[in-house]
Image 1 (cartoon, protein in one colour):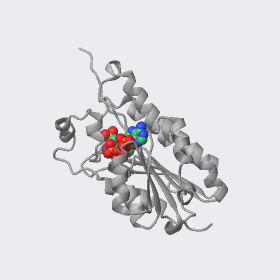
Image 2 (tube, protein in one colour; image 1 turned 90 degrees about the vertical axis):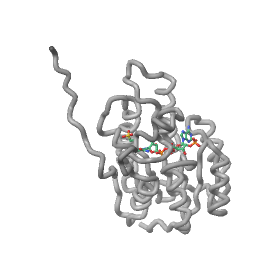
Image 3 (cartoon, helix red, strand yellow; image 1 turned 45 degrees about the horizontal axis):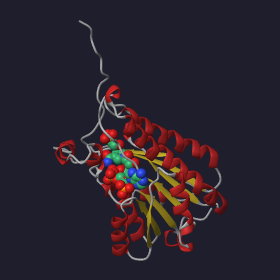
Image 4 (cartoon, protein in one colour; image 1 turned 90 degrees about the horizontal axis):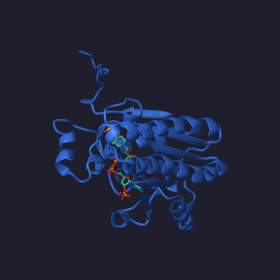
Length: 256
Ligand code: NDP
Ligand code: 8X3
Protein backbone atom coordinates (compact mmCIF):
# COMPACT_ATOMS: atom_id res chain seq x y z
CA UNK A 1 0.00 0.00 0.00
CA UNK A 2 1.75 3.26 -1.09
CA UNK A 3 2.05 6.09 1.48
CA UNK A 4 0.13 9.25 0.68
CA UNK A 5 2.66 11.54 -0.99
CA UNK A 6 1.45 15.03 -0.17
CA UNK A 7 3.34 16.54 -3.09
CA UNK A 8 1.10 14.60 -5.48
CA UNK A 9 -2.07 14.66 -3.38
CA UNK A 10 -5.21 16.76 -3.78
CA UNK A 11 -7.02 17.76 -0.61
CA UNK A 12 -10.56 19.21 -0.72
CA UNK A 13 -11.50 21.16 2.39
CA UNK A 14 -15.06 22.39 2.87
CA UNK A 15 -15.61 25.45 5.02
CA UNK A 16 -12.17 26.81 4.14
CA UNK A 17 -13.20 30.46 4.60
CA UNK A 18 -12.73 30.44 8.39
CA UNK A 19 -11.73 28.51 11.49
CA UNK A 20 -10.62 24.88 11.22
CA UNK A 21 -11.12 24.72 7.45
CA UNK A 22 -8.97 27.76 6.78
CA UNK A 23 -6.19 26.48 9.06
CA UNK A 24 -6.40 23.01 7.49
CA UNK A 25 -6.26 24.33 3.92
CA UNK A 26 -3.19 26.39 4.87
CA UNK A 27 -1.55 23.45 6.63
CA UNK A 28 -1.87 21.10 3.64
CA UNK A 29 -0.95 23.77 1.07
CA UNK A 30 2.21 24.65 3.01
CA UNK A 31 3.06 20.93 3.15
CA UNK A 32 3.01 20.87 -0.67
CA UNK A 33 -0.43 19.43 -1.43
CA UNK A 34 -2.85 20.80 -4.00
CA UNK A 35 -5.81 22.17 -2.09
CA UNK A 36 -9.37 22.80 -3.21
CA UNK A 37 -10.66 25.40 -0.76
CA UNK A 38 -14.47 25.38 -0.71
CA UNK A 39 -17.02 27.65 0.93
CA UNK A 40 -19.71 30.23 0.27
CA UNK A 41 -17.69 33.41 0.90
CA UNK A 42 -15.74 33.38 -2.32
CA UNK A 43 -13.82 36.61 -1.73
CA UNK A 44 -12.13 34.95 1.25
CA UNK A 45 -11.24 31.93 -0.87
CA UNK A 46 -9.76 34.12 -3.58
CA UNK A 47 -7.68 35.94 -0.94
CA UNK A 48 -6.44 32.59 0.36
CA UNK A 49 -5.47 31.47 -3.16
CA UNK A 50 -3.68 34.79 -3.74
CA UNK A 51 -1.74 34.31 -0.51
CA UNK A 52 -0.82 30.65 -0.98
CA UNK A 53 -0.38 30.53 -4.75
CA UNK A 54 -1.56 28.28 -7.58
CA UNK A 55 -1.61 25.12 -5.47
CA UNK A 56 -4.86 26.44 -3.97
CA UNK A 57 -8.02 26.32 -6.08
CA UNK A 58 -10.94 28.37 -4.68
CA UNK A 59 -14.32 26.69 -5.10
CA UNK A 60 -17.55 28.55 -4.36
CA UNK A 61 -19.89 25.98 -2.83
CA UNK A 62 -22.95 25.74 -0.61
CA UNK A 63 -22.86 22.13 0.63
CA UNK A 64 -26.61 22.12 1.31
CA UNK A 65 -27.38 21.76 -2.39
CA UNK A 66 -26.71 18.46 -4.14
CA UNK A 67 -26.89 20.21 -7.53
CA UNK A 68 -24.34 22.82 -6.43
CA UNK A 69 -21.98 20.09 -5.20
CA UNK A 70 -22.27 18.15 -8.46
CA UNK A 71 -21.67 21.29 -10.53
CA UNK A 72 -18.74 22.40 -8.36
CA UNK A 73 -17.02 19.00 -8.58
CA UNK A 74 -17.58 18.89 -12.35
CA UNK A 75 -15.96 22.33 -12.65
CA UNK A 76 -12.66 21.28 -11.03
CA UNK A 77 -9.61 21.71 -13.27
CA UNK A 78 -7.95 18.40 -14.24
CA UNK A 79 -5.09 18.86 -11.75
CA UNK A 80 -7.53 19.19 -8.86
CA UNK A 81 -10.22 16.71 -9.95
CA UNK A 82 -8.89 13.49 -8.37
CA UNK A 83 -9.50 14.24 -4.70
CA UNK A 84 -7.36 12.07 -2.39
CA UNK A 85 -8.31 13.67 0.91
CA UNK A 86 -11.77 15.05 1.61
CA UNK A 87 -12.03 17.15 4.76
CA UNK A 88 -15.76 17.46 5.45
CA UNK A 89 -15.48 20.44 7.76
CA UNK A 90 -18.27 22.84 6.71
CA UNK A 91 -20.77 23.01 9.51
CA UNK A 92 -22.44 25.12 12.13
CA UNK A 93 -24.47 25.33 15.29
CA UNK A 94 -27.40 27.74 15.40
CA UNK A 95 -28.84 28.88 18.70
CA UNK A 96 -28.69 27.40 22.18
CA UNK A 97 -32.41 27.24 22.98
CA UNK A 98 -34.20 24.35 24.64
CA UNK A 99 -35.90 22.15 22.03
CA UNK A 100 -39.49 23.41 22.58
CA UNK A 101 -38.41 26.93 21.64
CA UNK A 102 -36.04 26.17 18.74
CA UNK A 103 -36.44 27.48 15.23
CA UNK A 104 -37.29 24.72 12.74
CA UNK A 105 -35.48 26.68 10.02
CA UNK A 106 -32.30 26.57 12.10
CA UNK A 107 -32.73 22.85 12.71
CA UNK A 108 -33.12 22.32 8.94
CA UNK A 109 -30.00 24.35 8.21
CA UNK A 110 -27.88 22.36 10.68
CA UNK A 111 -29.14 19.02 9.39
CA UNK A 112 -28.71 20.05 5.73
CA UNK A 113 -25.18 21.36 6.28
CA UNK A 114 -23.71 19.06 8.92
CA UNK A 115 -25.30 15.80 7.72
CA UNK A 116 -26.70 16.01 4.18
CA UNK A 117 -23.82 18.07 2.72
CA UNK A 118 -21.18 15.88 4.34
CA UNK A 119 -22.85 12.67 3.19
CA UNK A 120 -23.38 13.93 -0.37
CA UNK A 121 -19.77 15.00 -0.88
CA UNK A 122 -18.58 11.71 0.56
CA UNK A 123 -20.83 9.66 -1.72
CA UNK A 124 -19.69 11.59 -4.79
CA UNK A 125 -15.93 11.43 -4.07
CA UNK A 126 -15.64 7.96 -2.52
CA UNK A 127 -15.88 5.89 -5.74
CA UNK A 128 -12.83 7.66 -7.23
CA UNK A 129 -10.83 7.04 -4.05
CA UNK A 130 -11.77 3.35 -4.00
CA UNK A 131 -10.96 3.00 -7.71
CA UNK A 132 -7.52 4.57 -7.21
CA UNK A 133 -6.94 2.45 -4.08
CA UNK A 134 -6.08 5.46 -1.94
CA UNK A 135 -7.93 8.18 -0.15
CA UNK A 136 -8.94 9.61 3.19
CA UNK A 137 -12.24 11.06 4.33
CA UNK A 138 -11.90 13.25 7.42
CA UNK A 139 -15.20 14.30 8.97
CA UNK A 140 -15.59 17.05 11.57
CA UNK A 141 -17.58 15.70 14.45
CA UNK A 142 -17.64 17.24 17.91
CA UNK A 143 -17.66 16.36 21.59
CA UNK A 144 -21.28 17.53 21.30
CA UNK A 145 -21.97 14.27 19.42
CA UNK A 146 -20.94 12.19 22.44
CA UNK A 147 -21.86 14.32 25.47
CA UNK A 148 -25.23 16.11 25.51
CA UNK A 149 -25.66 19.60 26.96
CA UNK A 150 -28.75 21.81 27.32
CA UNK A 151 -29.49 23.60 24.05
CA UNK A 152 -27.23 21.25 22.07
CA UNK A 153 -30.21 19.15 20.85
CA UNK A 154 -30.07 19.02 17.02
CA UNK A 155 -26.47 20.27 16.76
CA UNK A 156 -25.29 17.41 19.00
CA UNK A 157 -27.42 14.95 17.06
CA UNK A 158 -25.87 16.01 13.74
CA UNK A 159 -22.44 15.36 15.23
CA UNK A 160 -23.53 11.94 16.52
CA UNK A 161 -24.52 11.28 12.90
CA UNK A 162 -21.01 12.29 11.79
CA UNK A 163 -19.41 9.86 14.27
CA UNK A 164 -21.62 6.92 13.31
CA UNK A 165 -21.52 7.68 9.57
CA UNK A 166 -17.71 7.70 9.76
CA UNK A 167 -17.64 4.29 11.44
CA UNK A 168 -20.15 2.98 8.89
CA UNK A 169 -17.96 4.20 6.04
CA UNK A 170 -15.02 2.33 7.57
CA UNK A 171 -17.09 -0.84 7.56
CA UNK A 172 -17.93 -0.33 3.88
CA UNK A 173 -14.47 0.50 2.51
CA UNK A 174 -12.28 -1.67 4.74
CA UNK A 175 -9.27 -3.02 2.81
CA UNK A 176 -9.75 -0.65 -0.12
CA UNK A 177 -6.87 1.68 0.78
CA UNK A 178 -9.36 4.39 1.73
CA UNK A 179 -9.24 5.61 5.32
CA UNK A 180 -11.91 7.40 7.35
CA UNK A 181 -11.46 9.54 10.46
CA UNK A 182 -13.90 11.49 12.60
CA UNK A 183 -12.14 14.40 14.33
CA UNK A 184 -14.15 15.46 17.38
CA UNK A 185 -13.01 18.68 19.07
CA UNK A 186 -14.36 20.46 22.11
CA UNK A 187 -14.46 24.21 22.63
CA UNK A 188 -12.45 26.04 19.98
CA UNK A 189 -12.31 29.75 19.23
CA UNK A 190 -13.23 30.35 15.60
CA UNK A 191 -16.24 32.08 14.06
CA UNK A 192 -18.35 29.20 15.43
CA UNK A 193 -19.85 31.09 18.41
CA UNK A 194 -20.43 34.23 16.34
CA UNK A 195 -22.46 32.13 13.89
CA UNK A 196 -24.27 30.31 16.70
CA UNK A 197 -25.37 33.64 18.23
CA UNK A 198 -26.19 35.30 14.90
CA UNK A 199 -23.36 37.82 14.91
CA UNK A 200 -23.72 38.85 18.58
CA UNK A 201 -20.01 39.47 19.28
CA UNK A 202 -20.50 40.01 23.02
CA UNK A 203 -22.27 36.66 23.48
CA UNK A 204 -19.63 34.95 21.34
CA UNK A 205 -16.76 36.48 23.34
CA UNK A 206 -18.34 35.36 26.63
CA UNK A 207 -18.10 31.71 25.53
CA UNK A 208 -14.29 31.84 25.68
CA UNK A 209 -13.91 34.19 28.65
CA UNK A 210 -11.32 32.93 31.16
CA UNK A 211 -10.57 29.87 29.03
CA UNK A 212 -7.73 29.04 26.70
CA UNK A 213 -9.76 27.28 24.01
CA UNK A 214 -8.51 25.12 21.16
CA UNK A 215 -7.53 27.03 18.03
CA UNK A 216 -8.05 26.36 14.35
CA UNK A 217 -4.38 25.40 14.16
CA UNK A 218 -4.76 22.82 16.98
CA UNK A 219 -7.52 21.10 15.04
CA UNK A 220 -5.68 21.40 11.71
CA UNK A 221 -2.73 19.68 13.46
CA UNK A 222 -4.97 16.79 14.52
CA UNK A 223 -6.36 16.41 10.99
CA UNK A 224 -2.89 16.59 9.45
CA UNK A 225 -1.59 14.02 11.94
CA UNK A 226 -4.38 11.55 11.15
CA UNK A 227 -3.86 11.92 7.38
CA UNK A 228 -0.07 11.54 7.57
CA UNK A 229 -0.03 8.27 9.54
CA UNK A 230 1.46 5.34 7.60
CA UNK A 231 -1.12 3.91 5.16
CA UNK A 232 -1.75 0.76 7.24
CA UNK A 233 -2.95 2.91 10.17
CA UNK A 234 -6.53 4.21 10.36
CA UNK A 235 -7.38 6.68 13.11
CA UNK A 236 -11.08 5.91 13.59
CA UNK A 237 -11.88 8.94 15.70
CA UNK A 238 -9.94 11.52 17.59
CA UNK A 239 -11.39 13.57 20.44
CA UNK A 240 -9.63 16.65 21.80
CA UNK A 241 -10.60 19.33 24.31
CA UNK A 242 -9.05 22.33 25.99
CA UNK A 243 -7.47 21.36 29.29
CA UNK A 244 -10.04 23.66 30.98
CA UNK A 245 -13.07 21.80 29.57
CA UNK A 246 -14.46 18.50 30.92
CA UNK A 247 -17.77 16.82 31.81
CA UNK A 248 -20.60 17.86 34.12
CA UNK A 249 -22.84 15.82 36.41
CA UNK A 250 -26.22 14.39 35.32
CA UNK A 251 -29.09 16.84 35.81
CA UNK A 252 -31.59 15.63 38.42
CA UNK A 253 -34.81 17.64 38.86
CA UNK A 254 -36.04 16.85 42.37
CA UNK A 255 -39.72 17.15 43.26
CA UNK A 256 -40.96 19.22 46.19
P1 NDP B 1 -16.40 28.58 11.59
O1 NDP B 1 -17.72 29.23 11.74
O2 NDP B 1 -15.18 29.37 11.91
O3 NDP B 1 -16.25 27.97 10.13
C1 NDP B 1 -17.30 27.24 9.56
C2 NDP B 1 -17.05 27.05 8.09
O4 NDP B 1 -18.13 26.29 7.54
C3 NDP B 1 -16.96 28.35 7.33
O5 NDP B 1 -15.86 28.30 6.46
C4 NDP B 1 -18.26 28.41 6.54
O6 NDP B 1 -18.02 29.00 5.26
C5 NDP B 1 -18.54 26.91 6.35
N1 NDP B 1 -19.95 26.66 6.04
C6 NDP B 1 -21.03 26.84 6.85
N2 NDP B 1 -22.15 26.56 6.17
C7 NDP B 1 -21.78 26.18 4.91
C8 NDP B 1 -22.48 25.79 3.75
N3 NDP B 1 -23.81 25.69 3.73
N4 NDP B 1 -21.78 25.49 2.64
C9 NDP B 1 -20.44 25.58 2.64
N5 NDP B 1 -19.70 25.95 3.70
C10 NDP B 1 -20.38 26.26 4.83
O7 NDP B 1 -16.48 27.27 12.52
P2 NDP B 1 -15.39 26.15 12.90
O8 NDP B 1 -14.19 26.26 12.09
O9 NDP B 1 -15.27 26.16 14.37
O10 NDP B 1 -16.23 24.85 12.52
C11 NDP B 1 -15.83 23.92 11.55
C12 NDP B 1 -16.46 22.58 11.86
O11 NDP B 1 -16.02 22.13 13.14
C13 NDP B 1 -17.98 22.60 11.94
O12 NDP B 1 -18.46 21.41 11.37
C14 NDP B 1 -18.27 22.65 13.43
O13 NDP B 1 -19.51 22.10 13.75
C15 NDP B 1 -17.12 21.81 13.96
N6 NDP B 1 -16.75 22.02 15.35
C16 NDP B 1 -16.48 23.27 15.85
C17 NDP B 1 -16.09 23.41 17.18
C18 NDP B 1 -15.82 24.75 17.81
O14 NDP B 1 -15.92 24.86 19.06
N7 NDP B 1 -15.45 25.76 17.06
C19 NDP B 1 -15.88 22.23 18.04
C20 NDP B 1 -16.20 20.98 17.41
C21 NDP B 1 -16.59 20.89 16.11
P3 NDP B 1 -19.00 30.02 4.52
O15 NDP B 1 -19.84 30.66 5.58
O16 NDP B 1 -18.07 30.96 3.82
O17 NDP B 1 -19.75 29.14 3.58
C1 8X3 C 1 -18.66 22.64 19.18
C2 8X3 C 1 -18.30 22.30 20.58
O1 8X3 C 1 -19.11 22.20 22.97
O2 8X3 C 1 -19.67 24.20 21.67
O3 8X3 C 1 -18.95 21.50 18.47
O4 8X3 C 1 -20.80 22.13 21.21
S1 8X3 C 1 -19.53 22.72 21.63
